[in-house]
Length: 550
Image 1 (cartoon, rainbow, N blue to C red):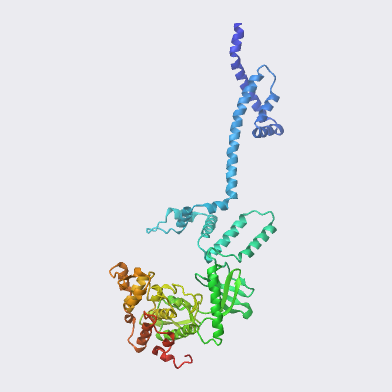
Image 2 (cartoon, rainbow, N blue to C red):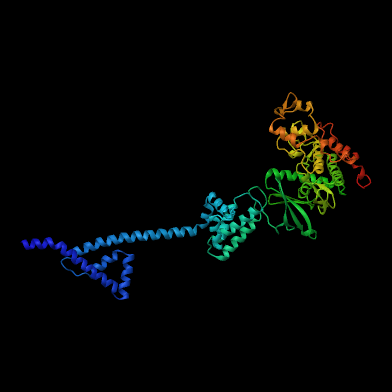
């Protein structure tokens, strides 16, 4: 009995040691068996952990300890199964992450934060330190492979296309669309090509966020006008240079109005005015731009004009704001006054006269050296000009809005809301002539009260009856302009403005005559302001009487 008890008490130890020995033999057998069996068994065991239990049952001998051995094998198998399952989960997760990154790389690029992009841009644009040592980030960026740099540039382009629209932003938007299309998988290359072709055609007639027509060089409008380049841009839309293929390749200017209701309405009004001007000036005696054609292009009113040169403002700017010579001022003033007088005779007020809206017919020039100023200066070959932009032109019988004209050329009656008429054009012309003479804007301000203070500094006090009648009571105190000369704005006005006659650079008769004309154009009271019928016969224009124009 005792022997039996001792045997039973030692049985677990015996079974345990025996099972380890059997397991070792099985392991050796599996690892060193022939390839068709051994390797396949190992692979099967890795993929299906339960397969090892089936092998164990098949290979073990039916001894008295087989149940104990199977139990331990089951425990070992469960441990291995957990390890294998955890390992396979980690492996699958890493594969999924990699697949996710590859598939949604484009979304990742677009979802990066703005700070990361700005930091990347700073690293690219960072300059070397004063000691000549480059920043560590800059050095790292320089060592970066060329491919990585190209990727970064592509990512920057994808980010920047969200910015404001311009020519460059439109181009980057188109490139990013092509880039995204390239990443998009397609079942058929031919079908993908046809889709991209259709997108390209439809994109030709898209508008940007501001309502501008999206176009490109070589774009054909109406099967006739081929776009060459952009000449200018404004609140109304854009002006482009075009080749008119129906007129032997003649160059024209095409004004493309935004596809927005209020600008379309203004454009229709401008077309009506231009059409009437064309019919009233058949022999082209007056210096007003001529409309050659107009049409509607997918919601955009397009007006075709004769192609002109630079505006008088742009010429001033490119000539470092050097004043025009006196003879050119006389010639330009005479043509402009005749053109605006033509409008006034036909019950029209331009309402937006400024140097930007007076264009040279041909802005070619030759360079001359000014020995007195010790610099090169541009001299126009031909000072002929034409008045443009009749989008705000108003008939006498039409409703007059309370505010007209660009700030610097706005008459005092408009600022004080006293009502306006054709005399507001005369005031604007007076501001333009003094700007041609000194090369700078006379009333350089963006505040109405400061504007009135500048007028008083240059022209003297505003008449009390005007201040008494104004609705703008915040500008007035006891029928005088409410203005503190000792404030910062007051000091600015006193420093940058002076009485009109002090702008004269010479005491000669022609200078005196010009300033006399300007003084009469800048008369506060619009009922006393000189008319253009009177201005055209002013002594300042006497030297031109020998010419054919009157």
